[in-house]
Length: 168
Image 1: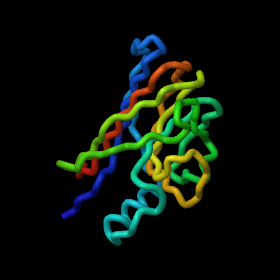
Image 2 (image 1 turned 30 degrees about the vertical axis):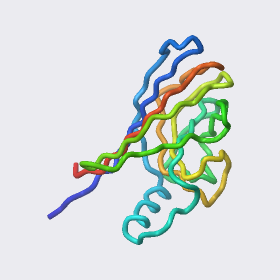
Image 3 (image 1 turned 90 degrees about the vertical axis):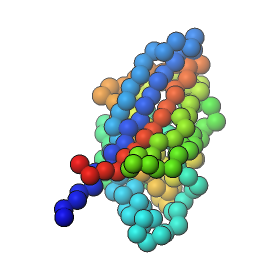
């Protein structure tokens, strides 16, 4: 019996301007990185312990200077993009997933309180909260919108993430 698996994910974004009004909404599909897939296989079939950090974190891909994301991107090297860090706390936000059911895992949404105006191009999941180029941390996935999305100081970006593994 041939049974290919398909791993997909989607980030949901809702941005509210400083007055609280919804300015834009986007759902964007993510792609997994090679190191992220390797980590998933090690954890699933070898019972390997986490590589770095504690749990998954969500970060923001900056629109400024963006050229591309690639399967070979790693936490330590992603030449086509940088992270947007103009939000309170200065670290990536926790993604707290619920137990998987029916091949789907989703979690509690998180929010980024924007402190610096700029542009957002997408989102990422990583194994470390600190925004740096640690080569031991894992970059699981990245997702990008078709164009840059503007955010303003005082605005709030609400984010959800859902991932699925299924037979196509």
